[in-house]
Length: 429
Ligand code: HAM
Image (cartoon, rainbow, N blue to C red):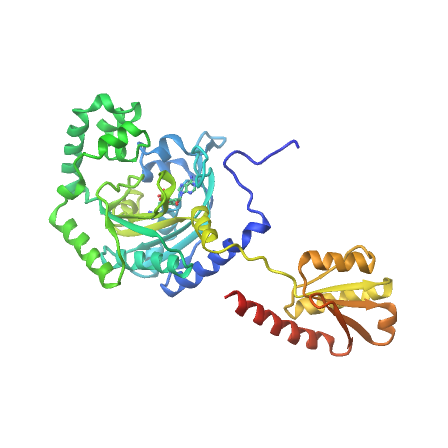
């Protein structure tokens, strides 16, 4: 074997695809009901878009970006997240002109050069949702209600919503100073990165994975002691709306999220499992980002779900379903194979999943193939049956066969297979 996939880049094979497809359908149904519209965006952007949005001192920008350079030496980066790209598209395409409040979602791969481990990949997928044009807190609550409604629709349980506020540029300054002085007094305990961050961007010390730094921030001042009255009111109003909607949450004053653009509301949905990979989804408000990227004053809030982590949870609840063909058509003899080929095309056009053999193998081999695919019925067409205008329909479960006239066959089989498929779907539901 000359090539294997790159470390941290994963194949998603047919046997694993069912929950991906189910998730896709559920997302479209749920997000559609909340008025979100889908966008497809490039996977690569100018590096500066990410460094300016996410922040130079973050792990993502300082360590994890896949960057290459064009012939003029300009940096281009595989997107590590979608928010910056959605903002860029929103500004560039003047989407604010479509209406004061705009709701978008993006589904696709993201790239971060992290150490691969369980639940952490270098290419992973996100379902990203963003609302532009409303300062909250009702849009904050609506977005969170949508996220939890999605998780509920997938029958997931054991998840906790963690909530915090990160204040605004006014109150963040006081908090930053308090944190800086707390860290300065304890600088010997910090790792090399955090020693630097303690001066430049002390909030990022909260993201550090080193145990000593994690222990140190446990007793650090929190933003909740520093928020201004407007940010406090916003946070309280959000909590009231969530309680009214019957949504439970935990206030987590140490939840700062690993990206610099957040203001006020920050949240994560976490599993009960311990470890750094317990966040299934995370998001928050970023009221200053559109302006910072050259757009107007547009408040915004969003979240992203980690698809691989969500699918791992879906697979804990239910084994992926394998679907089976409605019918296998087995032909014996060249004439019958020609007729079978055309018939299969017609049956497929009518919406049936039909399989056949490409290689004119023996009936025994074709029946074995049908069995391996899990087809419940096989239509056997031999030159002799054809001459009499008939085929044989074999039930693979009971191994019984009956003659079936070729006249009106497509309609009759389509009705029969459709009814069987409905019974199967009801049993699965
Ligand atoms: P994030 O917390 O960096 O936020 O990523 C969101 C989710 O993506 C995480 O909770 C996790 O489930 C998943 N994730 C992140 N990195 C990896 C990885 N290496 N492997 C597997 N899954 C991963 C954002 O990306 C923000 N853009 C969210 C947002 C949208 N904020 C506002 N709008």
